[in-house]
Amino acid sequence: MTAQLHFLDWLVIAAYILVLLYLGISQFKQNRTSSEQYILAGRKLSLPAFVATLVATWYGGILGIGENIYLYGIQTWFIFGLPYYIFAILFSLFLADKIRSKKTVSIPDHFRSHYSPNAGIISAVLVLILASPAPYILSLGILIKFLSGIPLSWALILATGISMSYTWFGGFNSVVKTDYVQFIFMFAGFALLLFFSWMKLGPPSTAFQEIPSGHFDPMGGKSSGYVMVWFFIALWTFIDPGFHQRTSAADSSKTARNGILTAVGFWFIFDMMTLLTGLYAKSLITTNEPMFAFVMLAQENILPPVLLGIFITGLLATLMSTVDSFGFISAVTFGRDILWRIKSPKSENQKPMHFTQSGIIAVGFLAVLLAFTIPSVIDLWFTIGTVIIPGLLIPFLLTFTSITIRPKFTSLFILLPPVFSALWLAGSSLELHSIFSLQAFYPGIFLSMILAVIFRTSSR
Image (cartoon, rainbow, N blue to C red; front, top):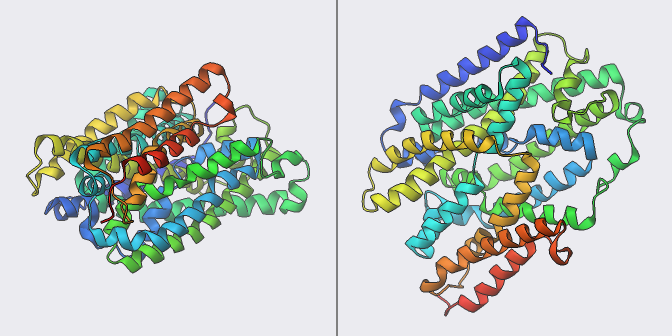
């Protein structure tokens, strides 16, 4: 199945891509002065830039969100919206000032300074998995294939090449500059789709009457345990490398704190637009490809040419803003926090930037390969969150307390919980149900708490 777009729609999309490339590549010269400039935009991120880049980066799974709304309704907001607001607000109130004041470049740097060099490397491997752009590249490739009809392999290469090329030139500053444009398009696109859907199909009170009642159940037909584990997976926010990078790059602690709180407001607005348009799609469309529910709704005589192009561009922007950001974070993690730390630990000038640029190429190549093996973005979020969060969360939060871990045990403290969660998850898969009806996240996080008690040493 291929979308039918007017020439004017393609023109809007082409103009958007050209603007992105121009804005991204234009940052080339000014971002070569130092690795801090290249990775954190010189720690001069203003409040508008902070909000635009944080909001735009958070929605890379937009196709999965559309699919989940189509299948399960408002449950989507209760597992992918509300818990993240709560933990983002807590991050703003209790962690933003502390992270900004420490002036570390990355989460692995933070672990390295508080625990040990080996702990820094192990945490970098976990962050590399956490920040992989592969699922978002897959989503973007699938959307490009749907729009153009080209083979998925070429769509993935095109998605990766465009989204990560300008970050090679301009680093984080290119990500921020392009996020301004992507922020505008993602909100404009869904605002147009919601407005025209409301005008043509009527208000929700009448348009949603034929939708199954289960779509208005917060559980969406799932068990409370399933929904609850998603709530805990939202603890991802505390160790999200995108949050850490933007907080470290802010021009002040106040900017970071207020920027996150402002971003929560924009996330709520965007979530309500996607939720309502997803329900409009459910009321109008019958499909066995719910991943494309938003696009199908837009094409059902809802949006005319040009406006349809703006909406499609909004979808592309929502995905690309996450691909370039997570791709860049993964490149920093792979190039600087792993390769550079292993090969050149004493060099602090431009060499980290060169390793990061090499990392962009390597991460892009690996992400394309991994994208072929990922069946579902939502399943991947669940698996990664279940396994990786237990290894990073407690060790990260303890660095802001007086509790210390004995140096010889710091690597085990970070490594054992994700290994335990992964084994539990594998065992659950073999049994075709969760062992003792317990999701793998809980054993991992419980083990991390136990190890914190066993390995702790005297207060600072």
